[in-house]
Image (cartoon, rainbow, N blue to C red; front, side, top):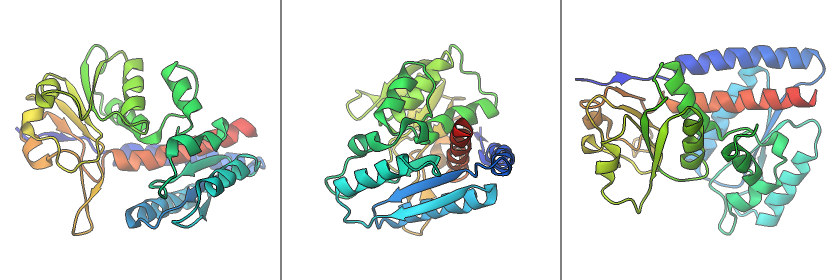
Length: 282
């Protein structure tokens, strides 16, 4: 058995098309959507990701300002810039790109992003509202997990889903979004005993740890659906996931590819969130 690939490219294209149409309408009405990405790192993989967001924004008719504060920016300077952008009526979406300089914590600084402009769900207020089932922008990667599963008609109601990873960026918000779909969710982490026993009992496994090839065939039951959120750089300049795709593909029923799975949907959702934030201020 070879797992069916769950590509995110078709879904991402559909989201981008809808977003471009909404952006054009807003621009015609006098509210051109604008996204600001605050960067304080020299990390090349991060720089590649930011450039990809800027290119996608341009194609969708969305303004995108890359605010580079330098890799040695002080936490106070980052916070001040986020507050300044939050107060700027011409900016509708704000992303604080990671990694951050030593001494700067995303959890602390993201609170300076206005809730209404927090298009990647980083502000603790956004996360709290998400957990409470109230309107908020979810972290785009976490939302992308659910959107990919829905696009491929993977039934979630009553299913057992194991989420491997408990970060505020993916693991925790993904668990809440999956609970909203009436799934039974187990969140696994570095202290989970016998990880393979837990994940191999699940109908769906979401790998969101950031460790290359952490999960192998022994972590997946036959026929299970596997969503690989990992984007780990390889020595040849490519990307590999948190799942050992070669072995898991021989056991799973379906598997998202890396790249080409969750990633393109994440970028598309960031732009969609920006347009919706702009619509809320128009």
